[in-house]
Length: 251
Ligand code: GLN
Image (tube, rainbow, N blue to C red):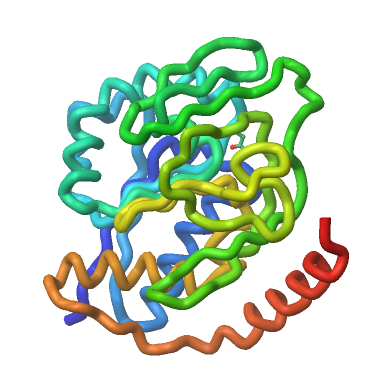
């Protein structure tokens, strides 16, 4: 019997922009196609006491509007110690946009209100109070996955500009990234990917999805797991169209 991955999807009813929940469907699909199981538990405000964060293989937060980020910040902060423990013990953290911002030091939103972050990482984010000043559009970044360069395609829409990023997720080749005209995008560590890329991220970037799955399964089994390839022909044809369209009309 093959393993079952357990994922904690935090605030799915509040943090879910541009199909972000689709990332969970992608993980589920890619596991099931290979005979692995997938369980997604949903975390909502007030669940902190009863939740054993460290028992999960992956913790996921999608993107959200300033309003929702403000609403859930206190609850998220009440889980700080448990989330820190999960992160330190190697649970994979995947965070998109609004979720990315909240794991840093703080997010000063477009109303000038400072939302305290969890402080797991050193970066911080500030939005202009001119609500029209947002990074919006398709984006392509280049990152490295298991020693190979890989282009990650997505869609960004954020007012927050993130600074003090020590280990970015990728180098921007089209679009904005961590702030207007930035050379870097997102934040990463061995068991962390925090990114502004919606898409959903994992449907457009199957190699990235498998990288995350391999990490989680290898950690669970205590030895390297190599996943059998899936037929990503359609995904790869879509990627070629997008890359051609975006990189030939370069910024
Ligand atoms: N509200 C945040 C911002 O505007 C995050 C937006 C998002 O998750 N797309 O920067």
